[in-house]
Length: 89
Image 1 (cartoon, rainbow, N blue to C red):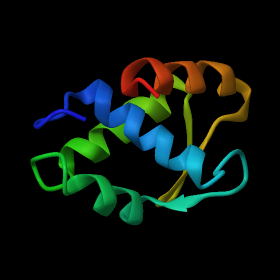
Image 2 (cartoon, rainbow, N blue to C red):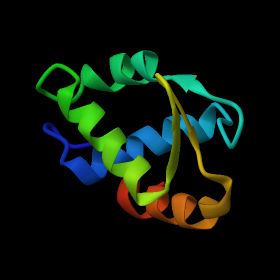
Image 3 (cartoon, rainbow, N blue to C red):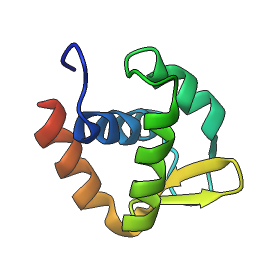
Image 4 (cartoon, one colour):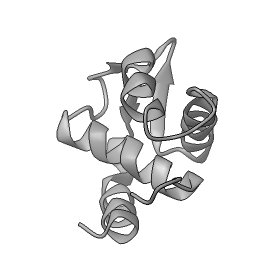
């Protein structure tokens, strides 16, 4: 990621971290943990990360249940392609 990541890079990093932890469908990861990991790189103390999570949940890429999130398995190909494109993996 660049020095100050743009929202697209933050979203890709969020999804990539969930991919590495195999958090698909019913396997959820606490949102606080995810925010703490990424807020060290992004400014605004995690508010920007939470906004990106809300955007991804609204767009259908994430399932949000309380204070936990997981990837939507129905959109797995789109998620993998997006992460590869943005993070150049």
